[in-house]
Each structure stands twice: as C-alpha cells, then as structure tokens.
View 1 (tube, rainbow, N blue to C red):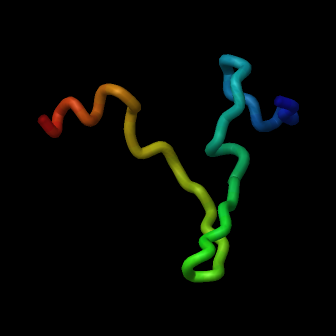
View 2: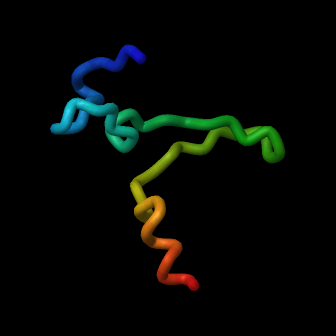
Amino acid sequence: ILVDEKYLAEDGNPDMEKMELIVFDPIHHGYIQLGEKVGNAFSDGKALK
C-alpha cells in the first residue's frame, strides 16, 4: 500500500479519518463520505451481551 505521508497517523499507519474517503451507494445512486471512528473492534460489542 502506498500512502502519502500527510495521511499517516503518528504510529506510521494509514489514518482513515485524515483521508476523507468516499464510497458509492448503488441503491440511492450517491456518494457518502466516511466519517469519524465510532467504536473499538472486539471490545465495544461485549457491553451488549
């Protein structure tokens, strides 16, 4: 993967929030901009049990 340095986090990994990514919605024929982090994988769901 090649990522411009301005899109890297402090740890050197790609930062999805900095990229301002968009995705195509084929149902509504539009583009959606991805936003901020809303949770933590493998831990937040445990509170729902």
